[in-house]
Length: 75
Image (cartoon, rainbow, N blue to C red; front, side, top):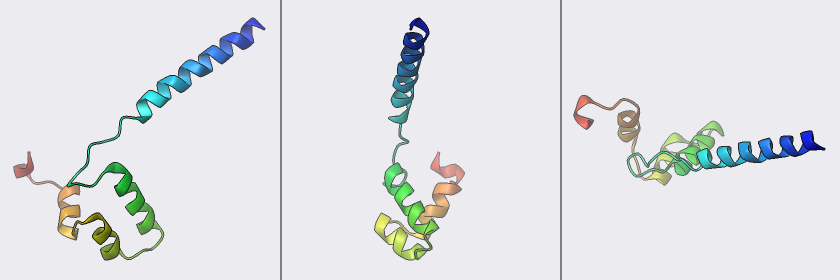
């Protein structure tokens, strides 16, 4: 029974540590939150029209390119 208690304690500690890390979400980029970007990526993976997906995020294609390849002036 002692081994079972130790295993349960280890599992509880692991879950607590994992839950703490899960709350560290990246800051919004160009006003788009991580959750919004994830939802948009899912829509794109579902073959939705890119321009419509970007419209829901209130950004344009140039903003997406800049977010992936920022210029030296952005720093």
